[in-house]
Image (cartoon, rainbow, N blue to C red; front, side, top):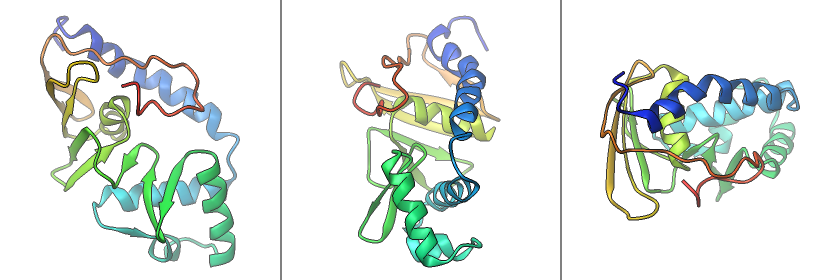
Length: 174
């Protein structure tokens, strides 16, 4: 990557540390919570509606226990549920946001924040195209990611994650 992309390079370089932080926080989740959160994320990754019975059907968990796990994850801010469907899971959002991404030649997806829009394909080691808008001036931004690494981005793009509080969503700030 050219040295002219310091802001985004910093985010990509920080993904490993970010993932380490996530791994540390993940120790506070039960195996069932991890499995359900992963299934919800993967369901949203397809672009199809993530109906709760469909998501839980592929897991070794009954509907009652699945409901408790989903409620716990929603309480922890890992996902959001509306009208019997998963609408947000681990940074992916079914409702449109300013942060659109196409991962692995798949359907258009949305991320909750700019950090998620870049971090999701980086963590997946995937090819992706991210389109977003500057939080401050609303100028359009496009970033290409190949194999989880930056392939193309304007030299003046900087992603800032201004809040170090892992319990608060960055959606409003990035």
